[in-house]
Length: 582
Image (tube, rainbow, N blue to C red; front, top):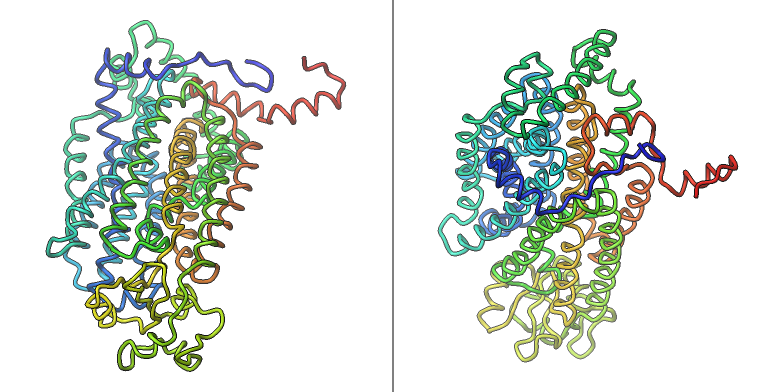
């Protein structure tokens, strides 16, 4: 151990992961099979962004009510909160493999309910079932992979779960585009999720339980048999000894506290190691959501429309780019997380996120200021009873009211029919309706209801892409890695469950409030608010989260026993005591 209790880990190259899994393909089989839970997680959180555009077309009620759109999106998140909370208990009681199998069944039920939904409320019920599965998968898949991985490549292998999450989101956008012109559009988009759930269920039936969970349940021979398939022969005995030491300490703790669920919760918060682990684990999970990432993933087509791209197909095609960048970023994380460490990647990622959010806020602000103006004559003569109700009393044919442009028109819950001559020229502010949209299109013009035509639109897309590029390698995958390795074995399910619940509660708050925030603050104000949250998150990550790269689970526990302080605070403390830190 070194100053502050942090062990020096060997430098692990990305190639070491592939070298090890090439020699022992069983490790990769375990990781990829469990990682399908991440694929489902990504697919079900990403697919709704495109499906929502077509759900609004099928159900006028959804199109009219912003809160109903938010509820359809966020009910999966509400379900995930319950799934993660219950999943922590199921993981510890029945095992990681059983939890994944239950999650698959929930995914399948939810996909079937949504695909055949006759009304919006049935879609919401399906989203809740899917949420139960997502919540369980979000904590169980990385936990299973982590406990079935050698320490030296654990970060890279857990990152495969992150890669499959982002891959699932990318796949969801491809599916969305594939079914754009198919009858039943959104039903196919939401129903396809049942296929990978069936595939994972079948694969997991042939795979073993986590070796660490088995040892904890006194199934020592089964645990050894699995470790022998994962580790070189000369390392197996050392792993068994480390497990024995950890489990004996936990059983001594259990004898004092008890083994009920309530006793475990009480014991977790009474244990300083678990408390410090939770401080770090919950911090990174909450920070991951309050940088605003899932508003981008859930609403990326809508954000693209805010930037001035009115077509559903165009919005989904451009949002596919952001999802692809997210997947590429996960590969970068796999390459560097075991070389440069978890903490450093997250801090660098947060600096990049804050910069991009501030720039995006500026871009959307300028787009709103320079939105096309309103042509008062055309607005009042476009068609009988077509003028926007909020605009009509103020307008005279030769003198449009002061301050009215496309953005003001949209905020008044009206539509903007762009000029047919030049896209940024003055246009008509008209009633918001499908009939008016059709009439505008019949004149060869574009009808806007979510965003305005803007010269700044391409900049919004560029920096949205950069935001994903800096998010994915750090804050995208690393919080799940940290939470898969920072808790003692006895509390790993409970700790991971609490952290996952904090992630999904934060996700619910952000996703449920996003559309309302954009209406109240505008896109610019909303992104600036996320930049402020990100700055707070950066500070707490720096303060509370230790480096765990290359450490055995038992070493992580010892690190937390000693307590963690950033090197800057340790130097100040030592100076105050008159200790030479050179």
